[in-house]
Length: 312
Image (cartoon, rainbow, N blue to C red; front, side, top):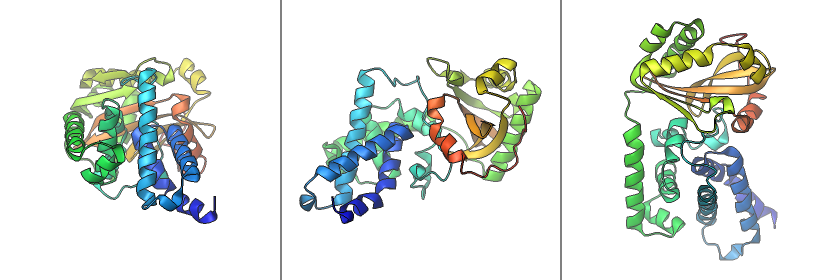
């Protein structure tokens, strides 16, 4: 392959990776899909490809759909069994992020909800909301009709919107104040204060420190507060599992403020928060090692600043 063809592919690599990440919810799988797309590009008769970007998008999207359908058939990623892979803000896989819809499409909340859509609905939603493709273009990418694309988009938006009813999102400074107060209450055992910091319809989702076979889900302020209080209470067993006493840092993960637990410079867990109207509306706890690999890698080049808790 000549260098011009390689350069042409590399110019669009980040866009393809961010598309694949939204479709698959896994950075590692997204990288594999992009590499497979490159191999297809390498083997293609490129002189017959009129619009390379459209061709690459079609190939990458359909490779991701193949992965989703194959995983469903093997029951490896049934909805409710896993959380998306969290990414530190600044990761190119999180782009584009120019519009509200683009930023929303890569939050852990929306990526988790997309697990409940069919592969085609998920692809249409991502192509439409995150990449602003027209229904005619989506139809060509997925080999469906324009009306089918519109129907899939309507169903996907309806299902996502039904689970995303919340008030106004907080600005970064306000969100930080809420999360810091929340963390202080969680680590001090002030359950009553925790309850007051939660919205009426709060939800909490956890992978059970990577040990649970299915996600742990909690609703209602009292249940979430009890879960959080137990989760943030340090014990010798938890420290052994983490490999030491973590320092707790605040960072932005998938566009949301998160508490990142670090032991010896290694990320061992993350809890991402959604803050709405001055309260915590949802939180997502991830500690499975395979879900933290890319976040951990990015953390090695990150300047975390002073931890909010030196030793947990």
